[in-house]
Image (cartoon, rainbow, N blue to C red; front, side):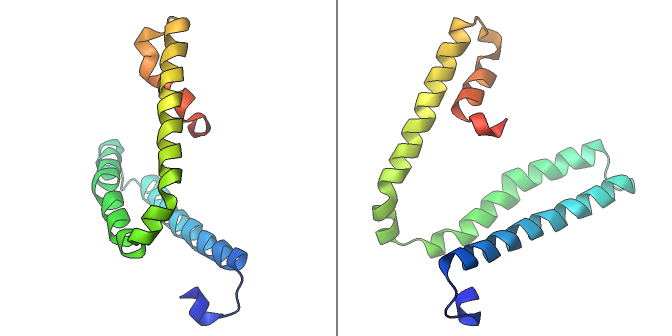
Length: 123
C-alpha cells in the first residue's frame, strides 16, 4: 500500500510509517480503554474478561489472519537459522534461570526467575 502511494520510498521510511501506524492503533485502543475505565464502564472483572478474550482469541486470530498469507515457503527456508537461533536462546535462558533459582535457593519462584533470565527485557 505504501509503495503504491510513493514508489520511490526507501525502506527506512516505509518501516517508520508502518511502525507509527501500528503504535497509533495501539495508542487509540488503549485510550478508549482508559476512558472507559475512568467513566466506570469497565470494572475489574470486565477488564480481566477482556484481557483474556484479547490474549486468547483476538490476538491469535489477528496473527493467523495477517502473517500466513505474507510468508512463502521460500521465506521460511531463508529464515530457518533465525528461528533455530531464537529457540536456542530461549532454551539457554530458561536453563540458566533454573540454575540461578537453584543456586539462590528460590525454588518456589523458579518459574519467575527462569522467565526473568530468559526474557530480561520483558521486566
